[in-house]
Length: 143
Image (tube, rainbow, N blue to C red; front, side, top):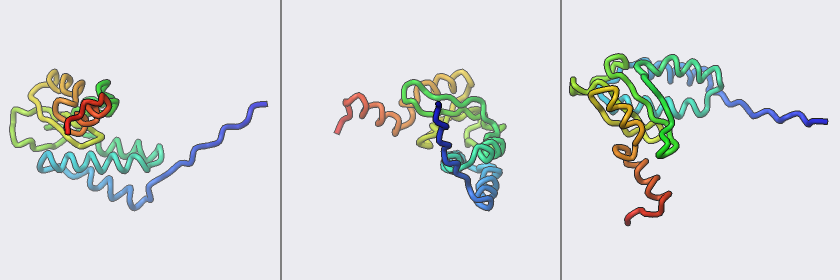
């Protein structure tokens, strides 16, 4: 006879915390560093949210998201955002897209979606923490 599987404990954010996070995520960042802060806040909230809360947070937060994928190079999530749709003021009109390392919060602005996809595939070119992680894994870290 098969044993019933133990259910994983479902964690959830308190309702007032969920609403506070959603309120912050609705704000339009004035600078890319505020965008990075919002990504970090979203990441922390998603780790504790229930499945239903995760869906609500993603609907609120992911304005302008073009693509989110796991980079083979690092095994970590990388997201591409369209600046105008996400409401990001990049300070440089030619930077139409931002590529963000979801794990570490580093990002790079680029002019085209094609370039953004290339950068998303290789986050060690622009994310210092990813570069260190890969170097450490290879055992060739300097210092």
